[in-house]
Length: 591
Image (cartoon, rainbow, N blue to C red; front, side):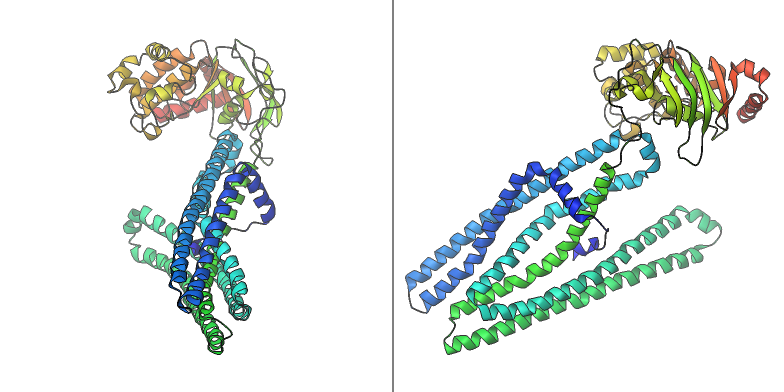
């Protein structure tokens, strides 16, 4: 009953449209799928023909004393077993291959769509939910493709084939069997509904149990400090008790269903024996026919039970498809326009914001009519209190978002009108924590410049003054950085990120306070590399500390989404009371 864990998983409203869309996605697999289906039909037919040879062996061989007929029947039966084995293997492999090919294509499409989605999408979406789409939902599809689809097809063909064979063998006994099967189907429907409700409660309450466990373990020091162990245990006990009741509801459904199935099977068997046995005695039915019917009867009940279980796998798979297609239907708010053109080269790096108004949603405006001209090669520091709009300006320059009003331009070209490739070639981001991908140091350095040679890399490292550090590593440029760069310190990761940006040779660099998380000694080292990197380039620095403002050519102060001060650090200390207060706060923090 492991399939029941998927019961009641999700509600899909337009199931027909979803399945048609899924079919269109896998249209290139229709011929392999048809081949697997035909192989399954042949395998099932060979299996169903087996009992007929048994009847011939009994009625025409044993009953007539014809040893040759018995031998021929046995040989045909063996041949049918071989045919069944071969075609079942082909069908199972074919179905699994089609399913895995479909999932291979679907995973690639969904991941490609996600990685191309804009920042607004990721700000609205929880990363855990997105990971769940690519893990648990794909797993639901995988389980159906690898197991459920095979069982659904083989059991469906078996039920249909056995029903037809029963009618062909003997109509009265077939009708008696179908009457019992009708009851079985009705019982299975009731069981499905009861189990679905029960397992829906199980999944909901196991979530509460896990949350209670996590909270209790994570906060164990606080619990012990305030001697609240008994209270915490009592609270968890209530959640645990609710989970127990939900599981007992599922157990109740299982406890009556399977004995009922067994009882109905015995009733059907008794009915066939009563009807068939009487007819064998009075000579209207052969003994071989009764044996054949009993074999078919044994094959009839279990597939129906299996289909009831596989139904939940199918439900979960359809639900997973709905969620994944829902992701694919999310359109990017920031996209390349038809007719977009490349930014003219060489890029000088002039940045302009003209009457820009922006908010992350319609209810709150973050920037109000902001106008700003940043000449080529200038290092601009953007300062202000938390929530003032500093990072928003950087996101607009990077075109993570488009303003609701106004224009953001590079070298006079509206970012909305530029191709994505030419814009990203011109602007680079260096975040607070330099993110490194799993792979070698060389892979990470050339991430933004895949055509760069090893000599290009060493020239950049030499210019930054970190080439000797790289040479001293055990494997040099071939050193594995490990997941998220865990092999290196924060400062080392930041130096690698700077080298990566330097190698891509952008005209404009946006820094989200690249030295704010570093100790003073490492900060000096990174600042030295920054001076090399920023030489001749336009820089927009989101400044969280005084030193970043002091090093800038120009400082603007943002307050409530408006520029309230603009000038050099020393000028603003003299002329802007708001900036002077901010500097005093910084200085107290340093002290």
